[in-house]
Image (tube, rainbow, N blue to C red; front, side, top):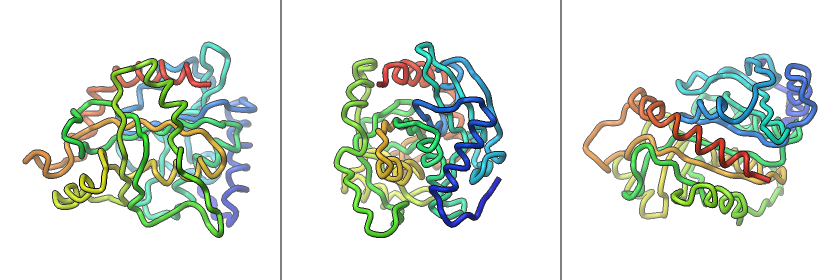
Length: 270
């Protein structure tokens, strides 16, 4: 249900009201955006209350990208908290405005969530990362040349990816590595020379989402936890060509393990 309203926060409020009407949940506690490879996590997080097609909620459209369900789901975890599962992510390369890219974050906030977990699938720039490995995002490099913020809105991003939430995740799963995620616009994959550049400037993984969503969440005062699934070595790390369908297959092969990891972390979040 696309909406061209010029006030993105007002649109988010209407979307939150529509979510309440569709799910019966008056207020969510945590929001979770499921990226490529993370889709099975919702099955282990808790009891499903309701599910609605994203295009039935103002401002959302169905993603055209393989690996995204296109559904918004309400779950209840064992301690009674309500979780909003966002299976509909809009990417910059889909040609919509940046407000559409971060609409899900603003809607989650308007629906009550003050913590958001952003997951994605990414190419491994760091030679130490293995395919199928989950990595905590400790910082990002935004290479999209875009920001979801407008005007003199100077938001501090020093602790954008909450040190508190990362510490909780590492208590549950001490083996988790931490790294810097770079967001690029896409939709093409990077060249080997671009990957060398990314490595030189400090990136450990590269993908086409998350950073601008995290900025929008921080601007609203939300706590952010970011998790990346390494779906493939980045261009030039090996001699193998990059193929989106193969990348999705890698995500599916790790799905059960990722679902368990994410469920145990989310249940521990404050």
